[in-house]
Amino acid sequence: MSKDVFIMGIESSCDETSISIVKNGREILSNVINSQISTHEVYGGVVPEIASRMHTEVINLIMKQSLKEANITLDEIDGIAVTYGPGLVGALLVGVSYAKALSFATNKPLIAVNHINGHVAANYITHKDLEPPFLCLIISGGHTYLVNVKDYNESEIIGKTKDDAIGEAFDKVARVCNLGYPGGPKIDNLAKSGVPNINLPISHLENYNFTFSGIKTAVINLNHKDPNINKADLCASFENAVTQMLIFNVEKAINEFNFEKVVLAGGVSRNSYIRKEFDELSKRLKVKVYYPDGILCTDNAAMIASSGYWEYLKGNFADLKLNAEPGLKL
Image (cartoon, rainbow, N blue to C red; front, side):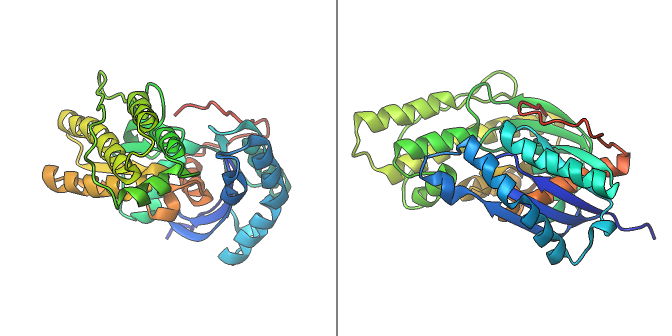
């Protein structure tokens, strides 16, 4: 029997400081997350300087807590995986610097992880039997990608947003509706009491690309034109329209490439309406649809450790020259 592999994941790309220990890429032993939402909420969004400072203040305590919960020592860790991009440069630097220091002090391999690949890997934890290839829809605050995941370490983008990420559109619609930050969960909750009875523009681009700026602008204009518009109906209509846009491209890709598995990833994949509609897609097209547990949809270190595990198996290690890459692409 092969030896178990324990990977420590470190995530600090935005406003969560998280460190996790994951066994064999699939089993969480600990996943400690320190969220800064309450701090940034008063500003209506993440303030980068504050985020960086708060990461610095708590990251060592989070590491010790993660080891304690996993009942493991640093000596037993096989590799240290860290998000090095994309994200806020100051926030990323805290995690990268900390990971490099740990790697040097313990003589453990350093593994550089793309945050977006981390979101995909969250599904390997929730679904122990999930293996590539599959079609993955990555929907988050900063990204909207349709990806052909060919192997654990190999993927190809077949579609992406040409303007706003879907999560950004959610946040801006929430702001204009005076719902506060973060916008996605607040829209999801309010929409449940609304009816999707407002016509909003549904845009389809060439190939498998997305655009959300038009629908975002339409919602803003409607709200300005009639400040008393039913906000629950507006949110329900917005959710319905953007979900139709997602499903249109996903269905087109399924039919063209004969995918049998569709995976959702990223913070927006936690949206209950989107999940319900993709469950319907699953029944209609006879494909399997996967999405992570709720806690693994948003930023966390378990997904980074899982992604790092597959890099570890390939021997894809970084050196101490590793730097943060805020604009890192998939």
